[in-house]
Image (cartoon, rainbow, N blue to C red; front, side, top):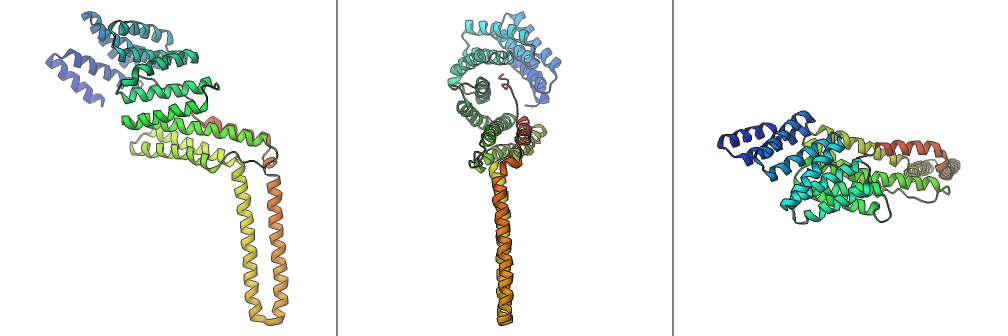
Length: 359
């Protein structure tokens, strides 16, 4: 909902004396300002709800206000301040047995510990929130929490919580994002998956680099296509919604994938094969033209054909030999240093993100 609509709604709530509606609209306005990066206005809105809660001894309203302020301070990287507000909110939510707010508090603590780089604690809080959200119908909240879990797994990087678990959670996140109708969340989810595939491509390129025999293909067309499909879907959604930030991110992802593809062994082999195919076509064309000349010129022409054919075969052998030589030296042609630089450049283009904040 737009800021103007929310302000109009709040005016109506004030006019009819609906304090619950007024507080809800005020909180929503705060989050709009937060998305617009107007933190001082967001803080002002959240503090008004806090003042009301304190004045009326409304514990549930107080819990909501503290969580809102906690999310604001997480966003502004004021970790200690955020933790103080969220822990107070958690105690109130547990006392009132409001499970949804307990889940919100755990999700906020998950973000706080992630910012502190304590990924194990972050993982514990995320799982606590996930258990409480099992029966929740808030698809956006669930999707953001799953995205956080995916990012935590990525950071932990252990055998138990490795890339397959990370991918699983991000794929679930994509499903929730599509159901939620939140296009920004959907674009973020698609970008995250594209970036994950690109990280996988970088690892596979490293394997190709270590394999000096030149016989093994690790980066296939399928994995490159998978990354491009995620980025292109994000691009379509971003253009449809005039979301320039997501559009720019999608184009960056596509460019990074293309750079990685060029560094792969399969790309170089296909280029060599294309050159060899062109040579074989040239040889066939020479033979065809020589055959026509034979019919026109008789015996004398046949001698000419023989000479032409020999030249064509010699050209074909030269192209094949050149192709074989290039195959043999395909990997050394891009030395370790050069290939590593290209891979690093591609890898640095992949998105590096912490957990997306759950409100």
